[in-house]
Amino acid sequence: MTSSTPYDVRDAEVIVVGSGLAGMTAALQLAPRAVTLLTKTAGLPGGSSLHAQGGIAAAVGPGDRPEDHAADTIAAGAGLVDAAMAALLTRDGAALVRRLLDDGLPFDRAADGSPLLGREAAHGAARIVHAGGDATGRTLVTALAERLRATPSVRVETDAFAVDLAIRNGRVCGLLACHGQGWVLHRAPRVILATGGIGAAFARTTNPAEATGDGLAIAARAGATLADLEFVQFHPTALAVDSDPVPLLTEALRGAGALLLDRTGHRFMPDEHPLAELAPRDVVARAIGRRVAAVEPVFLDLRPALAAKPGGFPTVLALCAEHGLDPFAEPMPVAPAAHYHMGGVVTDADGRTSLEGLWACGEVACTGVHGANRLASNSLLEALVFGARVARDVAERPLAPLPPFALPRPPAVAADVGHALLDAIGAEARTALYDGAGLVRNGLGLLAARRKLDRLAAALDMLRCEDGDSENDPQAPPEIVRHWGEARNRLLVGRLVVHAALAREESRGAHSRSDHPLPNPAHNPAHGRSERRTLTLTDLAGAAGPLPGDAACCIL
Image 1 (tube, rainbow, N blue to C red):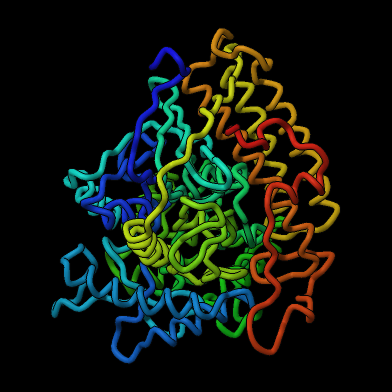
Image 2: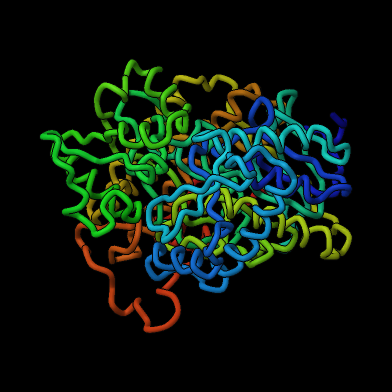
């Protein structure tokens, strides 16, 4: 550390935050440009990509076309998909997946070398490319991580928790992070957020513990424009066991023939939708959710899928065995869980945000390709496509030299704050968000959640040291700072989701309100998209009253 600042200052050409598929893709594509990749995990890879059982959707099969894939994407998005962005995703995605196949990445293939293609909900064709059966995410990101480690232009810093952007006049100047050894200001003209989703802000989720909405919260505090935050996808078939996170039973099971049954053994999805088990995820999730809410258990009979694809679901079988369940003997209990966030930081087709020098890609970004409900297996595709597009734009776009800017003051967390207190605040926040802004919402429940989250945010803010010479105050160790910072991010993200859900007084896609059960016809133009609402942190402050101190940008 220097004598004049309470942290190290390190210069970088490009900062990538996140070690999932989007972040690693961007970092690899930027070679040989110097990149510093920050991840709060202990190693590569990290994030939700590692746990993705589903495959990558791409129109690479005989007779399939990117235009058909785009049409399915638009239909699933319930009127909010940007058609031009969907066309870009499916066109670039098909070409990119073909290149990956040609490059020899370990995708599942037939004897002739062609990819084995599966079908999932709301797809009109079999176009899902898998790797390692139901271990696509792990297989793919593990292979990319090996390439990343062998790339000399990329410096990977693990156990590095990104806290806030350094901003001067709307221009990104760097990133403040808490490392294992203390605070570091990474001074850089270009920052790429690839931090994944917000699932860990909910009490029941399929996402890993690190999915605390860090990138979304960082961008919000810096004043970036956000959109579609109310649209949170709940996966229909998470294993109904006492676990955090809850294990996912991939959609590919239903694509291969698995059936949803009620407590009597009746297959109920044909009564709910013409596509039955292959209906859009929001339809299937709500059909299951209604029964679970009425204390009626729901089961997924995996046996037809296991018979159709022997050896095709090793991850699922391992998860079931881990919980003492035998899917060959009986159907598995399932219930919906928070899974994917369609909203995020608004970007253009090249991942540029509303802040100069800040890009975003992957789940943290809102490109318009998912609308109100993501089409199955489009998430890994989006990470690949927009990770590459961001890298190209970052490499090609000239930026003026960094202006002088005031060095930020790190948030000072009191030294006597312990894990137990932070755990208690975090658990209450996750329950409040899940109960108030879960699978089905209503105005009263959302208002109750907002009041609860506001109170918890104020309580968390009280755990800082008093303003003053924080360098001389006793400081919490880095692990407590990270714990506090993740709680801060979950609370801010939860409040933003609730605010957006209150504002959308209709039901659309993954956003379902029992007090407004129908789509608003005014938002259904004959051509184009439904009304899309953007917001910034200022909108939240205006609706909920004064924000706690964490809401202010830390940069002077």
